[in-house]
Image (cartoon, rainbow, N blue to C red; front, side, top):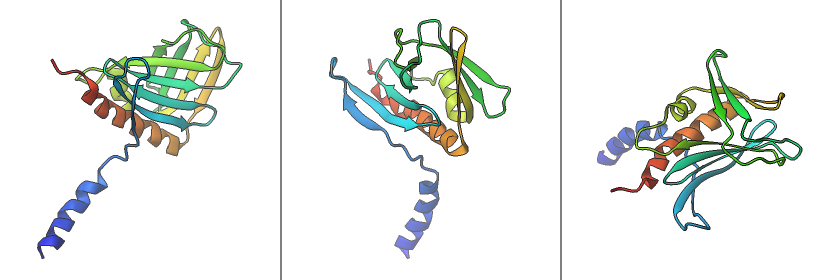
Length: 163
């Protein structure tokens, strides 16, 4: 009877657990621990989220022949269609289709990261020199982004050095 009671109490808790697929690895240069989601396949690009003790790095890989520089922007369009977030490229200039934006890793969740964890993303719009690339997301991809961002926001806090 005790075991049945424990099973009934444990089932609802396990239903609300997030499915976090985060890998731990060591940075090859600093030898510090970092976390990564690996690449998440989206409609016409891939996204990887990597966290270390200082920042969370969102890397979009759109394939060759897409150029980005320090003036490139990313507009995150949320599911309601009216709410947007504008971010700048924090990566180096390249024509390999790589776009980065970073968020500081702090004990309180950054506003932009919090929005990614609480709202579903409808599309990512990447712009460089009047060339626009739109990444539309289906409902499954929207959920994957929201879950991955939520897991990284939570787990990245464990990497912050304690004074």
